[in-house]
Length: 302
Image (tube, rainbow, N blue to C red):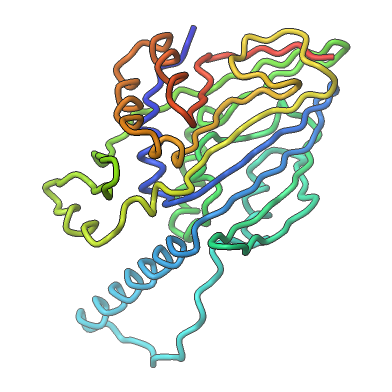
């Protein structure tokens, strides 16, 4: 059984909720089920600054509304510097939801060129209990309201939104990976014309007015999602479609390469209405897009 791929809806939703973000996740798995996971998250500095500015503007607007409503306001204090977009503290908090026994082995801030972010390396004792999401939004810093909503939703969703792993240890060892279906969400219509800026589609809520002064290619540029698994020993047998030595790739979407190819984004859009086999054939012709289409991936390794 193959999964439906509303890939454009998934990617565009991510773009407008996370901005220009690059995530690279590589799980290194041993035959006994333990291993490490290295996660690198980077964001364009200009986009990060814009998002921080938008957050401050919304906060100020709420405070001004409270003053207009006659609420008692505390005396104004000297403005505090904005909190960093990423921090080791937030990574440790996120780690608590990654499964029992997961530990942070190393953390390093990234501030290079035009990007900021972090690299984190975790260890896990049992991949059967590891919680990994394909959605890079899970790597974004969350506000207090977001964290509360996430905790409430996690009780209802369980593991349905995460990759599920079932390992039978041994020599050889066998791993079953269940990839969750992507829910189709309401998204912003986006048209990427070659050599022109992309603009959000107009809607009744006037979203076009809000986005008209933003170069939308800044959101697309640098956007990449990668999730792979590196196996101890060698892969003996697998139904995965993207295998390189002892590494399988579950997702690798590089928007820079997609945008650089004229008409590629429109081809990506066509995959939404195709059956999985035809969608896989089409996606294989688009530079920068590798997405596993099996619902269940099986790997035997030794």
